[in-house]
Image (cartoon, rainbow, N blue to C red; front, side, top):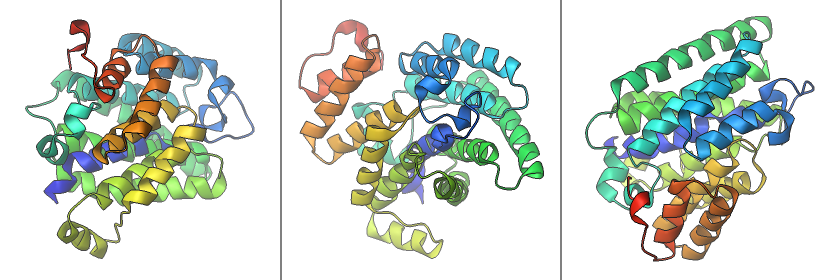
Length: 298
């Protein structure tokens, strides 16, 4: 089970935001949009996340939440901002982490920032409360499925990679994947869901045969090749999570020695987010180039 630690974790950060591309009839609702341009405020917020401007991203999400107090999505986005920041600060979204077998299997060294994690969990709780209120009115409400998927994914991520509670993280895998599948059944164009499903397949498929056999009895399955196909689908056609799918797929590609794929994806990310030190540093590593001193914080 321990082997699922950081593996499961990354899986479910991605899972965490599974529904961000849901597309409904009301463009003013986040989960209703089919692309970044549908909700400019949210698009701006996630762009700030991907360029490591975390306080500014939170300010953007908070403003949107004030205007839409009944919507669970802005609270989930706030939670994502705290989690993404901690993953960034801990160097999780890097090849140094992915290619280090000990760290990849067992999570970060040390402990996460206590205050950041407290704020993360507070936002997560608010998102769940609002989501359940929607489900009470409509059992298949896509907004609620979206928020609960995000909540399960992000909490599993935090439990496994940051807080080393691998058993707690495992309990959330099926929950997150079930919500993702429900979402895709309603909205096949919600390809951000494939970030979660693809990561889960890749990570579980990367485990040893003995561990996979044990998970099989819990109805948890994995397939590395299928996982990379699903992540590729999200990287090609996703929305809010498209950049996240690209960095995860690029790091997985490096593990699999698919260097051309990793280089292409990282080049696309550096072109799209030229001010991101994270993407620039990972592209340099993939190309075998020296990393500038001001990019070595992680």
